[in-house]
Length: 314
Ligand code: AMP
Image (cartoon, rainbow, N blue to C red; front, side):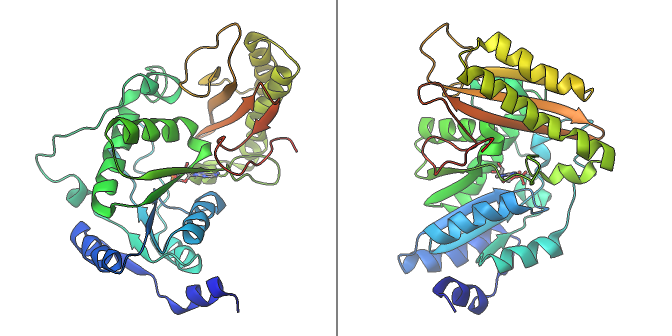
């Protein structure tokens, strides 16, 4: 048996429900000089989540996965109540990946009575999913507040996020930089179904018909990326993407091409990496996806510049 497999089989996963228990367990590991990796999630694990756990397992001595459907990042009318919750299945999957600690706190413990602090990153959170016509900036304030809390509880050396939530990863990196948080942020490539649909816990909401239509999101991103690589303007590239959505009767919540470093509108020249980002509600599922195109090398990627790249459309 390989070293990692032996380790997985040998070590039972601990499910911990309070910050105090987790801190105590991690203090012991730290005392032995072990590095700690954190994968924050809302559960209902799929291969995207598992890829983050695998990366953490490969790079860190101790792997912590948090499972918390965070009410603070859902607006009224969103799917907080119906979000899939499958703790038993998730526990088994995390165990199989060699995760050491699954942290499953109660909302009342995370947000006790009188909770009155919010961590806000401005600017980056006002566009795409943060725009008032989308989920709104409060969504990201909910994300940064819970992630800051998790960083304080776990004090990870490295925290792992998915490129699928491109804006979220950018916002978290900005928070970490601005607040001097001593954690390294790793962004991992988007994991996709064989037909290109980005894996998401919300894909479970799709009917068979809507599941077939949902592939249009990736088709749209590919069309825009191809147009950009051929030298098209952002406007023309956006039109090419829009045509793919229209073909499947999908009206996007947004479909934008922005500078990938700071989500600002494109200049006429000089943009090196651009992100094509889309959000759309298909049936009951609000889905997002993105691809980054490097205009210098003409490459399209599903991964950040610093990570091993997975080519889009390859
Ligand atoms: P969630 O449980 O949806 O909040 O996601 C937890 C983490 O998994 C986030 O960092 C997501 O970006 C990441 N993630 C979700 N879907 C994927 C995917 N298809 N590929 C890679 N990472 C993903």
